[in-house]
Length: 251
Length: 338
Image 1 (cartoon, rainbow over the protein chains, first blue to last red):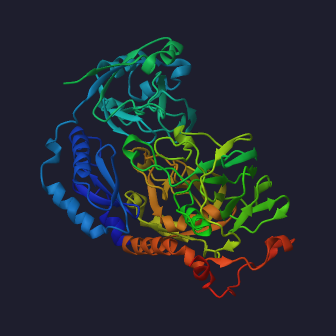
Image 2: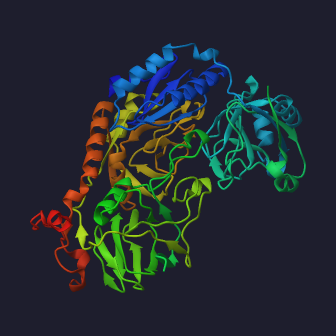
């Protein structure tokens, strides 16, 4: 036990690192913190895993800087999969990988502050900005969908300037609504379902990120970019197709 | 005439479940499905059908229903009280459900119980599965007045049971990505601590209450959100452990101290609130071996089927009986099915 946990310590690992998740998963991590090149590497490595489609692999996914693989213990074992992962990792420089094809730029209206973002002032203060400057910063340039996770269709967006490296709060906000814009650790999230959270709630979008009955149930894809702009009338956003957001192709 | 279940009453927490949806993890949608996968295997063995058949999951809830035609049912998972037109039914067994008879199920101590139908439930599928995933907004809980289609049943046998699965109170863990963040002292203390199953628990996770202080880490509030798997023990900001279950989030920023082996989750899921548990780390190698053995055991469950010793209708206080004492010859199933 002791030896295992020490060798698995993320602080001591060099990257890329192959680690186990639970009893039937592997995580290939390209950094221990948020990093653009590591994010691209994770997306590209996961795409390569899909292409390889090794027997016994049940499912692949990405998180921010890692690719995840779950396998069937009856069909596969840790040693052989670890060897395959090592070989695939060594086959190219994953940090040089391009972003996925078919990316889009989404222009997304947000109602900031007030009842629709009750923690805007608190978050801005932690970032050392006024509310007005905070909104200007968050709307100044596009943030990228680094991964989809936690809940269906839910984007982790980044990376914000260094002064937005603010921690999550210790307590949980019992419920922030679907479409909420929240912030922590140089990232923004738009929530796809109402949920308790430790992230600070600063605004509200009209986005419905997961539509289980639609032909394409998930609005955003990793690699897409999102440019927020301030809006006033949340009811109008919610009534509009795609929450008032518009997409254009990124080339 | 269509085969269907008619739901007369249902408390919150009654849902249709199956083995969930694989392939949407990258889009943030966890597998979901029945939290107690052993129960799916047991129900399948009792009714002689695949474990992919959809079932009713009772998350500590009660239900009353009847069938539009003669059907077979099996009752698995956490022990619950079941009656057929007022007569008690043995839990952990298969039974006939005659057309129009009223089947009532209510919790005893808590935990997740399952009602399996011969032929399986066949509601409309969404994203490739029948199961409700309430956290994701897929489907909804079963409600009074619902009619749920039931598939065709090619089996006939009822009155069968399985020996009770061994359910000790040790949950075995393998180390997770963040186990080392907690430090060896905290890990030693984790193994020495007794945990009480809290009343707070649902399909997403079950809270455990330690008999000493919690397991908070200073780094825990600023780590990167990372992949979660069911069984992970997440430590929230206040140091309290939650065992994450099938409807959990796909990634999360709270550190996980370890992952409960899937084969040990039914121990926790079938116990009532207030039950005591201990946590014990095993190596990954041992954990994988235990999982493989359990997968093989589940695949062979039907070999352990036994006939109920007496007609339940003759037994007014059936729940107090020792039901299985292993007196059958053991080969009558083969003879019957040959």
